[in-house]
Length: 213
Image (cartoon, rainbow, N blue to C red; front, side, top):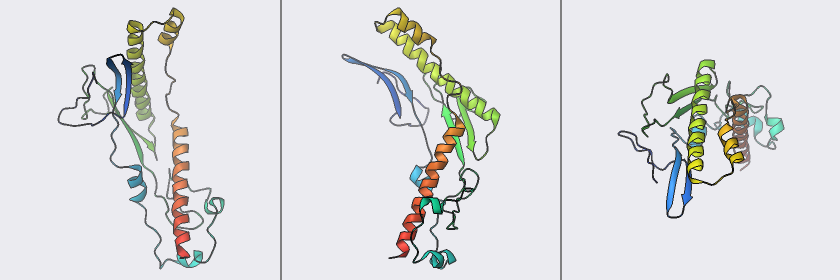
């Protein structure tokens, strides 16, 4: 690659997203994105969860019964964004979620600084669950817009210099702006919660099926 991610005293590994133009005998990296995380989604789901113990009243109640359907198992008030998922088979199948979004932008000199403060225009940390601060979300959206602008400007500049496009397409490319906001965080959380509820039901189903063996 013609561009490398450089972070003092840290190795970020292989980029998670690479926008690259492949030319005969040459590759041009236009944008590189590195995403860091503390634990895998599998670890996140397993760590706070404990299967019901054999001595629990729940085991006595459910043993010998058919496995509940998802509709029978789900309780409308259960929402992992605000509390444990207990279901109609009372047990904390899923603990409350806490989700923070962190993003770093590359400085103009090509460096990433992992020690940026949240007041910086190159870094943001915002909690989207269970609470959501409007100031943090505004900063988060601003950083994402700035990232999209970097990608747009870099791509447009390259196309204008190296590609043959008619004027109409060039004008359209230059006028394009990313949606504002880039993400609908309510929809994001809705999909996250649906996925977590599905995982919680899978945990219950696996546990209940094991009771009959």
